[in-house]
Image (cartoon, rainbow, N blue to C red; front, side, top):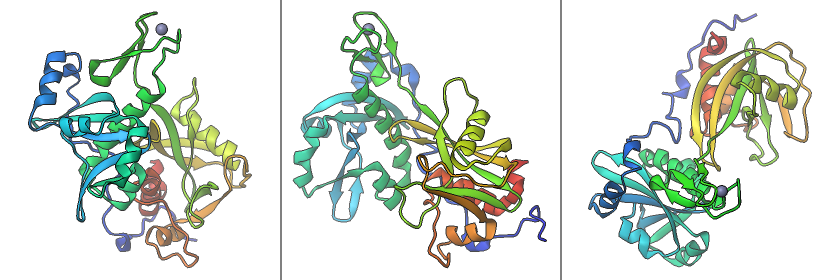
Length: 323
Ligand SMILES: [Zn+2]
């Protein structure tokens, strides 16, 4: 029997890819959010640029094959349908913004051949823009989506006002201050020796398998959420939980918290209301899936997703991911 702690090399997989939406180069410059004069000056700066987003759609410039997601404040204003302008921060000296548009204002733009309009998942998976744009696009999309869902005070129902460069909404009636929310989601692999559990959601492509995942609930630690989700979805009891990495996931406003967990049982009992299927995969089979050479065409999620990196870590490091 192979000792799973002996780590085989996987040169066929090449270098580990970058995790999508992470490692932003933008300085959020949070101290400027309360400085109305500085924000007004930034909007007039020749170097200012921003991302134009309405609902799930991102508007970008297209010239031939080249796609540029940045617009000047004046270009963004010319589209009409402006909602919030959000100060994302500074890229070196260049101010960066998110420009929220009424989704209805995007419809007539779809006919223009100098624009490319699509959703952020497609942009990330197809690599339509330089990867450096993905973190600020995620920041802008999550914030613009939060504004769209929080126009009224949850305390008293009064329409709220945008303040602090788009980082807070205040209620003029009950004086409550509302801050953008990030929802924690745990995503994890249950590991036993040389194998781990992957599952399938009915909305996945037919050949794709991924890590189990679910929202952390109020009053729960990350470790407790990991153990509960694996038990609920696949019937596996887990012990030790080791944090691996995290990823902003602006669909609409999650923070994916990636973990590896030590399985204490092996019999899978699937909750069909949550997932379509789940089963154990060996590291060798996972390596075939990552390398797109599985005999049945099975695949993992692409490198833009944290599940890819959790799987990759287990394939390369085995149980050491639980050390
Ligand atoms: Zn209120």
